[in-house]
Image 1 (cartoon, rainbow, N blue to C red):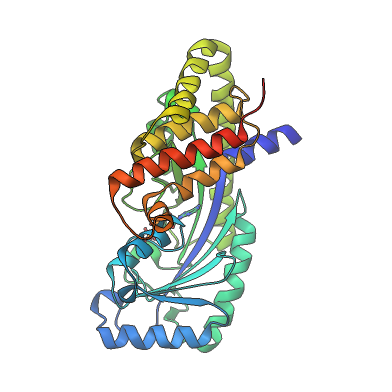
Image 2 (image 1 turned 60 degrees about the horizontal axis):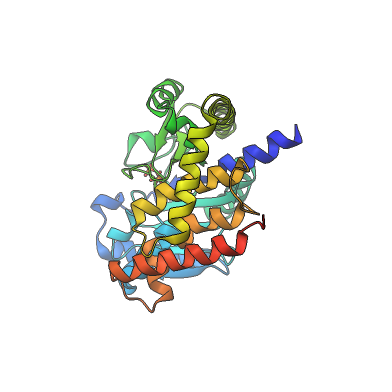
Length: 335
Ligand SMILES: Nc1ncnc2c1ncn2[C@@H]1O[C@H](COP(=O)(O)OP(=O)(O)OP(=O)(O)O)[C@@H](O)[C@H]1O
């Protein structure tokens, strides 16, 4: 049982719960003028204690991309210059103002932590509701410009790594099957993002007509079932294609150890295999967590920041290869 829990932890990388909230006395964001947006930013800022504030229009592109890479903000928020992001020091709580809704409250947790994430965001939501005039209807619940967000306004999601299901060509079928249960499968950066590195975001499709607890339970059960199927897939690969699997994983490891430049799509493909190899103990890697961290730190804006804000793709690719090798050498198990 303990071993299963450990393995499952490596499949489920992080959890997020977000709540969509709107003001009752302002038009929805697509009709909101700049003045209205600034007023809401100001009021939310006053209601939040100890949060860092970033106004989208006041920061450079690298900082914007970095916030998306760190999963603190959505891509959509970054298109609104008067929008703002507030987040706490631990980066576990964030509030986006001026996204698809006036407010998007989000809570992030490592691993499968949907309930903890929900409790934390619920506490913040109750605090804000006391001072901000939310648009709420006793029959429909929280109101939103997009019908899929009316009701609880909640999306609960988990970011999962499913290389065995991808390798065996089962992901399309899985996505179709879970959609019948009201579950959506997206890429790692959410709506509209292509899956990379066999990373998928699993979340509830609708927020109306069910309680928060029901929605979380449904996402949690689906994610746990997918994790079980993934682990089963790994066992099958070991049993029936051991040599092919070892060959593929070692090739990825070798490329990562010796490449002089790594573009993002290639890096994401290789890191997925190397993570799988480390988790299955088929590669000489001592620990998995530093590899998981690379999924965030090796994205372009994070690397550009370490080079002093220069977004030159060629230089970023060289730096990525160098940094990955430092980590892999540090994690190498002696023979
Ligand atoms: N489980 C998760 N772990 C880490 N980050 C996540 C997770 N789920 C979502 N995110 C991040 O949240 C951001 C928004 O994701 P997404 O577009 O799916 O949600 P949303 O904006 O709440 O949904 P929508 O606007 O479609 O109703 C993305 O940048 C994504 O990286």
